[in-house]
Image (tube, rainbow, N blue to C red; front, side, top):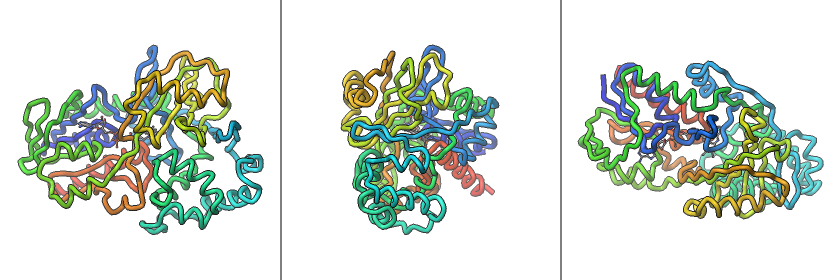
Amino acid sequence: MKKIIILGAGLSGLAAATELSVENEVLVLEKNNYIGGLAASFNYKGYEIPFYYHHVFNHDSVTRSFLKRFDDSGLTWKKIKMAILVNNRSYNFTNPLALLSFNYLTFKEKIRYGLFGFYVFYVLNPDKIPQNLDAEKWLKKYAGKGITKKLFHELYAKNKFNISLSEISAKQFAHRLKAKEALGVFGYPRDGLDKFIDNMKNYIEKNKSKILINQNIQEIDLIKKQIKVNNKKIKYDLTINTIPIPEFLKIAKGLPKVYELKLSKIKYCPAVSIVIGTDKFLSNHYWLNVLKEPKLQMIMQHSWLYDNYPEKITWLLRYGGSEEDLGINDDKIFKEYTHSLKKYYPRVNIKWYKVFREKYAEPIYDKNYYLFKPDYKTPIPSLYHAGIQVSYPLIRTMNSALISGLEVAKLIKSSDS
Ligand SMILES: Cc1cc2nc3c(=O)[nH]c(=O)nc-3n(C[C@H](O)[C@H](O)[C@H](O)COP(=O)(O)OP(=O)(O)OC[C@H]3O[C@@H](n4cnc5c(N)ncnc54)[C@H](O)[C@@H]3O)c2cc1C
């Protein structure tokens, strides 16, 4: 039996703990006063609503198996509708025929886009794309210049990572396209996300392991294998890091310099999100991408997926560039984001709102990410990594986070035998 300390009670840390707590003494340390990390929820009038939109893809087999194991209520599944809002018009973007009326593109571009869609769905194998190829070169070749600039620059460079397409990895981008999000049937757990997270916690604690919240980790001494947390020192045999790498580097002592330098190159994209409650839906789309607006980039009408709250629940969201909003007060964020919303939906009646800010929403998968991406194993034998920073080139989902927790646990177990 080993003493294993897991840093962070997000899905990856909890997944690792469910596996390892059976035969080891596991201690999960979480800085917040809640667990679940990016997938956590808040309570509104007795209803649990996630801080950020969350849906489950059909092919998210690991998320589905965790849900089955820790929440027997099952999922509701819906074929969702998608739209693009640009230049004061809303374009349905759900089926191939909708492309015909997508007049944001020229006729020639529409044909090219149709062919590109066919290529992505039926021919493309993202694993065959070279690691160092950038998304701009790849897109210009397969989708053409016009579509690359008008659509993918807006959607994925400006709105997503706020870096140019020439800096983004084509491989990761292709994985994202291959997930066929626009055509998806999406699921959501009938009891929300918090039930399976709570039940994972109960399972871990039943195995005589512990999850502690409100933990201020001051230092991890990797040589002495000792953590200083809330002014107490705790010894460990192994530690698994799932917290964002820049935060980990602030507290880690004893990393080899070259390795530390490599990890310091990892940058993250933030997210700022407003949850709003309205009396009616804005439109019949679940997912709306907003182009060319200064702040608002995405609208997700959660209630199309899961209509179980007193009001319709929607997220107004910004990723790329949202670092400038992290320090801005809620009222100003609300005014700025809804300014764009009201251009498209002037009659929207917002009954309440709540703002969430996340500095580390996703690592920026630029084209060099594969060079400095952390692996599960590290140069320090007692230190492992898991979480969304290790799961590249898979896209950042609950599924990839859970997989990383299972994988790291498997590695640790196999090193025991
Ligand atoms: C806006 C948004 C939308 C998303 N939508 C979807 C979706 O639709 N479908 C889907 O499947 N996935 C979605 N995801 C992704 C999913 O939420 C994540 O991939 C997953 O939750 C990541 O889990 P993790 O454990 O790797 O990281 P995290 O959840 O980030 O966990 C890390 C934990 O470490 C803690 N921590 C940080 N610093 C410290 C410290 N110094 N000491 C102790 N603890 C610390 C954090 O508080 C956190 O609890 C979305 C994410 C975001 C941000």
